[in-house]
Length: 117
Image (tube, rainbow, N blue to C red; front, side, top):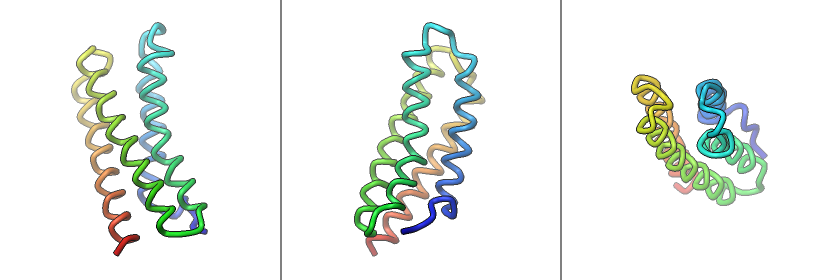
């Protein structure tokens, strides 16, 4: 069993989640159960799946949870794009957050390759 807190990718995903919670706190109240919730859930799913995968018994199980985390990064990427297009976040915030999402996705992909190789 690995300690997820030692993984740089988990640390980055956790920090992004904290930033996303802050960014979505100013979304309109009518989006609380809509886009706000969807963005937050897709975001915290990333570090949560990394943590859960670390608790599994094999590298194959860990890699499977990392794949799920990658799916959540793609979902988050779209939700952020939608929030930008709806003018709920500024372009500069979108670029900042989307860049971090892409970085995390690349890190997850690299980690999966190491586990399988």
